[in-house]
Image 1 (tube, one colour):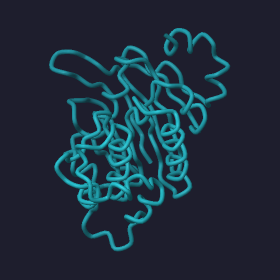
Image 2 (image 1 turned 180 degrees about the horizontal axis):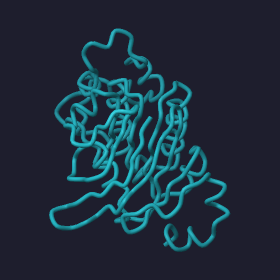
Image 3 (image 1 turned 90 degrees about the horizontal axis):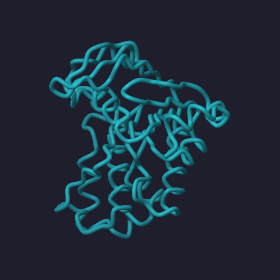
Length: 231
């Protein structure tokens, strides 16, 4: 579905990504791992057209590099940034409503689905999003993206700052996406959740991919983990 080839990205004169190659298949959870500053978030932003880049980004065989971010989103790629972009003065329900795309006659996800997966959002349905906890806002951001009915969802650090119980809930949520045929590109610093639910892993370091393989292969590769992941 998603194929990234020889991707180079820049912030002004700074060369941040150096020839990144990666792919995500249908109904697959792929983890993009690495320390802070390794280029994981920049890779997501480059895919979504948010930073200057060179190379190729193909979505279902179509070249999308150079497209506008809203055009990429309408093609079926959802993006959940790490800064939890919610509309603070709007209620939970209104935030979810804004996530819907017009023209979808039979979307895979409904308000009832969101409230079933995260009952806490149902309890806060008419609450302004800005007064909710960080964990609740993370749930809301994930659900609002899903309301757009993407075929692939890119999620940047979904467990950052969340309580262990909520982290487990997010893991279950991502596995539910896979059951419904949605692909996931999971950007994570923590190995635990990625090793538990991902089909394949990419490890980044200094703006390049330094490892590709299964979670088990990564667990068995002590050198890669020590050099590029462990603190």
